Image (cartoon, rainbow, N blue to C red):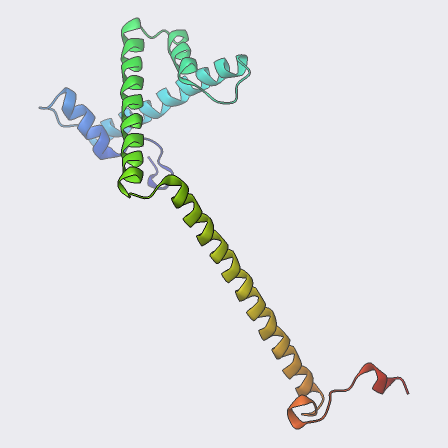
Length: 173
């Protein structure tokens, strides 16, 4: 496989999966690459079938029901579908745990959510004001540079030597 455009599982992941199933076997690089290519093709095949089913349901998002139906359409056994369901359940449990950890961190900080929201809004307002101030300073610096360039263009005459820069009225004669 071309390492720059490699799609699939990392070699270490494939090794761990194989060792988990058959611990006393080593796997050759060509075999690992072939297994990796098979994994990629499997995902593509199931995804295409699931996308067809999602399209029939007039959906742009593939949901787990579409994947399950795709696996059925592709001839996978009920045992395989049950295993897929258990993996989905395990993923849901992990997602809930992650959400609980996130929520518990919010609770542990000891600041009510409303107060955190107010603090966030204050920070946003300060950042906006800082951005406005920086833009103003930049515009003032540009104006000063333009005035200096005008003064230099008129041979040093202008505000720096006490005389006024020429105006439109000076050119009307």
